[in-house]
Image (tube, rainbow, N blue to C red; front, side, top):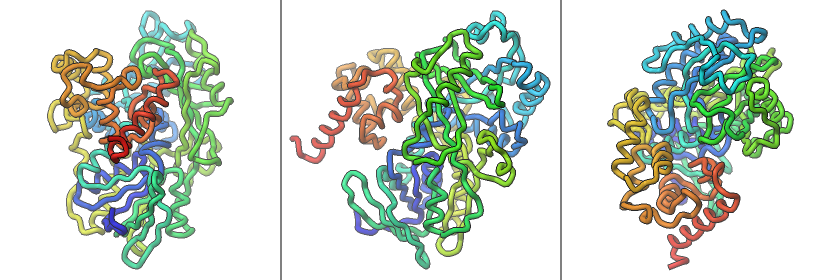
Length: 518
């Protein structure tokens, strides 16, 4: 790597907004460097509720513009990555003293019609008696409402955007900290430092994107000085995972007496994911952790609805993320963090070489956010290339060709059947996991393999060398945590010692590549 490299755009931050902007910009012919101090998506972007949704509850705060924008993106995203996304039906048991039936009906009517709905079914009201969604619930719940949104593997969404950015020419540098960035007369001068070697190098960029998430306000203050127009409100959201509370494919939206709503969703086959909380946060965004009060809050709400009761000792895993929410004028008077807008604001600064700071946002609107960001940046950098991501698929998403068609989502099972015919030697659970993770790119993972033995050593149950090699070489996996909790969710299924074995394999692989081991 050269001592100093030149680029058009330096993106600081490897969460979903940063990789989305890098991908869009690289696809328009701009020279892009992206740096992230940790693993890609290691923080907020892999600690979400894993939903692609319009945000039904945002209608209560009259955020019609945000909901419309998110609903438009919802089905577009579902079609762009049908392997890591899928439609999900939500059931809302009716509680008369929470929200009235007419209010819920009105909200769902609006939710169905704020944006075109090509293939997701409309909302409905139904009786719970005898219905599959009613069986796990306490008998006092007799009626419910249902509506559709989408589910996404959030961490893989980040990775696939980064892969696409790299394949379009971007230099993606995880575990690379931006030590110092200085505004010169006609460019930004940044010193980046690799975590693994502590080696530093300089980058000269014509424009800078601050996509640092919870650290965005601090970075903006460091590079542009005080006086930013918008502030961020840091809110911690926590989730718990417990043994499965129901055995069907629907999710639940549970209403709490405090006015909040919490999701309970099928997760990784054997589990239920419950979340999220909304807690004001003033700690270190590097290491947020669920509090005992949050765990109890989520358990007690689940127990209010489900026959099967849970307690904190039933929690098999939990995760927390710090969401950088946009503090707007209306929100300053709201005491509850849940009421703060999930919309985003792109803070533009042309007092020298361009600076764009990304404030706020949510996973569902990341593509639109990136498009708006590059629409502003590209002309300043001499690019006239048009926006392109709305009509594109993410790596592996071209199950039925390059066009992002609804059938890629609705006919995923048919594609998996064809995959299993091509590779009859693959055990069915492994074939499905590969299909969900890699889509069409499963053929790259399986290249040269004609039997289970060809996948190499089974480093951990269900995790073979062929997949590990692909994750290390193509998806920047550098340790067991990257593999077990972000590139896959195998951490929920494997024995505690699996992480040690994976780390040892990755270390041996690195040593072999550098020639330390022949």
